[in-house]
Image (cartoon, rainbow, N blue to C red; front, side):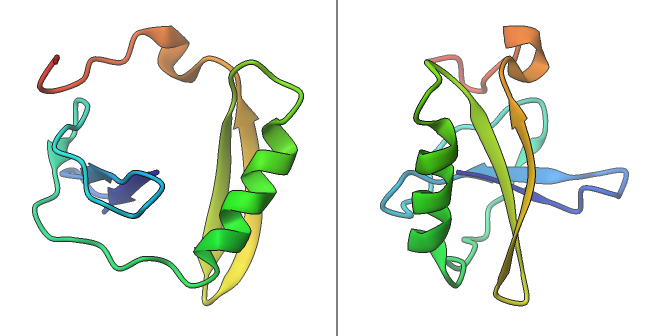
Amino acid sequence: MDIIFGVHTTNPTRSFYNRNWEKQNFTTRRILETEPFPKPDRFEEMIAIAEKLAQKFVFVRVDLYNVNTKIYFSELTFSPASGMVTFIPQE
Protein backbone atom coordinates (compact mmCIF):
# COMPACT_ATOMS: atom_id res chain seq x y z
CA MET A 1 0.00 0.00 0.00
CA ASP A 2 1.25 3.40 -0.90
CA ILE A 3 0.50 6.33 1.41
CA ILE A 4 1.32 9.88 0.25
CA PHE A 5 1.33 12.69 2.81
CA GLY A 6 0.88 16.32 1.79
CA VAL A 7 0.16 15.43 -1.82
CA HIS A 8 -0.90 19.01 -2.60
CA THR A 9 2.17 20.64 -1.01
CA THR A 10 5.65 21.39 -2.32
CA ASN A 11 7.24 18.71 -0.07
CA PRO A 12 5.10 15.56 -0.14
CA THR A 13 6.38 12.46 1.65
CA ARG A 14 5.52 8.82 1.03
CA SER A 15 5.40 5.48 2.81
CA PHE A 16 4.73 1.94 1.64
CA TYR A 17 3.07 -0.76 3.74
CA ASN A 18 2.74 -4.46 3.10
CA ARG A 19 -0.52 -6.38 3.35
CA ASN A 20 0.03 -6.92 7.10
CA TRP A 21 0.32 -3.13 7.53
CA GLU A 22 4.06 -3.27 8.27
CA LYS A 23 5.88 -0.13 7.14
CA GLN A 24 8.47 -0.84 4.45
CA ASN A 25 11.90 0.79 4.35
CA PHE A 26 11.85 2.13 0.80
CA THR A 27 10.28 4.99 -1.10
CA THR A 28 10.32 6.56 -4.55
CA ARG A 29 11.33 10.07 -5.57
CA ARG A 30 9.43 11.46 -2.63
CA ILE A 31 10.99 11.67 0.83
CA LEU A 32 10.32 8.64 3.04
CA GLU A 33 7.81 9.53 5.77
CA THR A 34 9.34 8.64 9.13
CA GLU A 35 6.15 8.58 11.22
CA PRO A 36 3.98 5.45 11.04
CA PHE A 37 0.52 5.91 9.57
CA PRO A 38 -2.40 4.26 11.39
CA LYS A 39 -4.07 1.37 9.61
CA PRO A 40 -7.17 2.74 7.86
CA ASP A 41 -10.65 1.83 9.04
CA ARG A 42 -12.21 -0.78 6.73
CA PHE A 43 -8.74 -1.80 5.46
CA GLU A 44 -9.72 -5.44 4.89
CA GLU A 45 -12.76 -4.33 2.91
CA MET A 46 -10.53 -2.13 0.75
CA ILE A 47 -8.26 -5.14 0.08
CA ALA A 48 -11.28 -7.23 -0.95
CA ILE A 49 -12.50 -4.48 -3.32
CA ALA A 50 -9.05 -4.08 -4.88
CA GLU A 51 -8.70 -7.84 -5.38
CA LYS A 52 -12.11 -8.09 -7.03
CA LEU A 53 -11.36 -5.19 -9.39
CA ALA A 54 -7.91 -6.57 -10.25
CA GLN A 55 -8.73 -10.26 -10.67
CA LYS A 56 -8.81 -10.28 -14.50
CA PHE A 57 -5.52 -8.43 -14.98
CA VAL A 58 -1.89 -9.58 -14.79
CA PHE A 59 -0.93 -6.24 -13.23
CA VAL A 60 -3.01 -3.25 -12.20
CA ARG A 61 -2.80 -0.62 -9.49
CA VAL A 62 -6.18 -0.01 -7.84
CA ASP A 63 -6.58 3.44 -6.29
CA LEU A 64 -9.03 3.62 -3.42
CA TYR A 65 -9.51 6.39 -0.89
CA ASN A 66 -10.85 6.10 2.65
CA VAL A 67 -12.42 9.39 3.70
CA ASN A 68 -14.16 9.42 7.06
CA THR A 69 -14.51 5.61 6.85
CA LYS A 70 -16.22 5.85 3.45
CA ILE A 71 -14.44 4.03 0.60
CA TYR A 72 -14.13 5.77 -2.77
CA PHE A 73 -12.84 4.27 -6.02
CA SER A 74 -10.52 6.50 -8.06
CA GLU A 75 -8.92 4.60 -10.94
CA LEU A 76 -7.18 1.54 -12.34
CA THR A 77 -3.63 2.15 -13.57
CA PHE A 78 -1.92 -0.40 -15.81
CA SER A 79 1.59 1.06 -15.99
CA PRO A 80 2.30 3.50 -13.15
CA ALA A 81 4.89 6.10 -14.19
CA SER A 82 5.28 4.17 -17.47
CA GLY A 83 7.15 1.50 -15.51
CA MET A 84 9.98 3.94 -14.84
CA VAL A 85 9.62 4.42 -11.06
CA THR A 86 12.93 4.63 -9.21
CA PHE A 87 12.91 3.06 -5.75
CA ILE A 88 15.16 4.34 -2.97
CA PRO A 89 17.15 2.36 -1.99
CA GLN A 90 17.35 0.38 -5.23
CA GLU A 91 17.62 -3.02 -3.56
